[in-house]
Image (cartoon, helix red, strand yellow):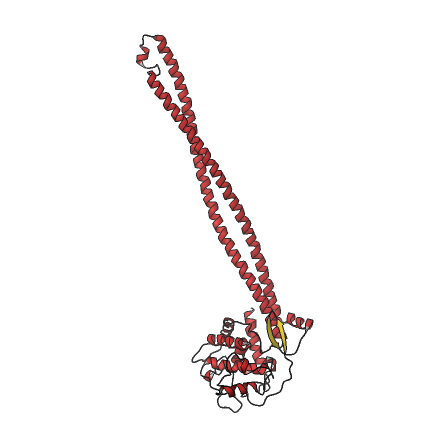
Length: 402
């Protein structure tokens, strides 16, 4: 059974200290200082697990960085090969141009020779030349024609050789161009791989940083005796994922467990109360939200002889009242004027002034700075109450660290 929150409670003597870690202020229970505090944090099972995750993430990041470096080296080699191919292509183009010019010169020479023979009356081998009166002239024509023919034959051989060289060079250039295209495709692939490696490296580094932050937060909170105030260590998705593995049968008329998890984190963050732990408390109070009438998820208003608890019009109203009451239990200096939201009219009082007064003068203000202080009249009469809530929370954390 739950107490109403306005009944008689047990005065708990607790020293509230601020544990400043990673820029976060966490309200803790019994003071732990220096090396002893760090030893408690380092030896906590959650921290050991988180540190292992961190080391694994760092190793993965180093591996990714090594693969990225190799990709960069391969990319540089491919780029050098492409540059060499381009230089060879330019040189081949120059040679092809030179051969084409030589071929044109040879063709011009052959054509000029043909024209000269035609103008001079042939090469001396035709019938008219053989029947000429001047036999000596005919012989001379034959000799000159034969010499010209040999010259033309040599020129044609050179022309054919030039053409063959040009064809071979053109084929070689074609193969080079094909190789160059293949190299460029390889380069494109390597660039894509490099981007993927870079993304992987960034993700691994982010995971490593997240693991380190999680280790610090969870370790500090455990070492401080699970304070009520502080940052949430779990996300809504993580909380719901764990919840869905537990076989609970929630009966929620106007909301879902997913929506409730998000509201707990939002309302908790508004008042610097650990919303994920308050969610664990709600699971204990409602049997996994199987019994949560009137948007009341924390047993507010129920007592050993009460027939009904407090009625809240919306899920957020019920959670807000729970968070504000947790804040009052945890912080002896809490004041209505410092609340992110006005004191709940459904829990403290309908009149705003009276609600603020009730909040500021709450009889158990500061009695339970940690979850270990709950029970025995603080929030609930069940002496095992604190262990139940802490147990649920630790199982949620362990699930996220598998």
